[in-house]
Figure 1 (cartoon, helix red, strand yellow):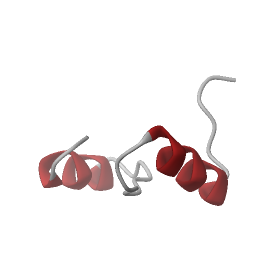
Figure 2 (cartoon, helix red, strand yellow; figure 1 turned 120 degrees about the vertical axis):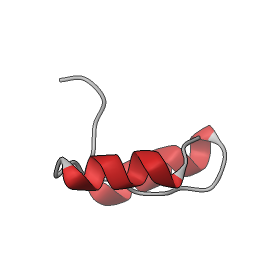
Figure 3 (tube, helix red, strand yellow; figure 1 turned 180 degrees about the vertical axis):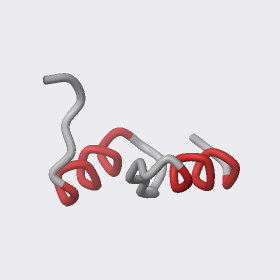
Figure 4 (cartoon, one colour; figure 1 turned 90 degrees about the vertical axis):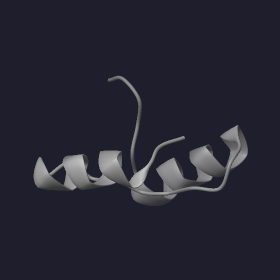
Length: 40
């Protein structure tokens, strides 16, 4: 869970950001959609 402040700070640093519905399932779906991974 995050707020607009985090989103803006990441944008200024050039770090990608995406919003997902609440719940592990939706976070996983968004990560797969974006091709993002945690760790190596």
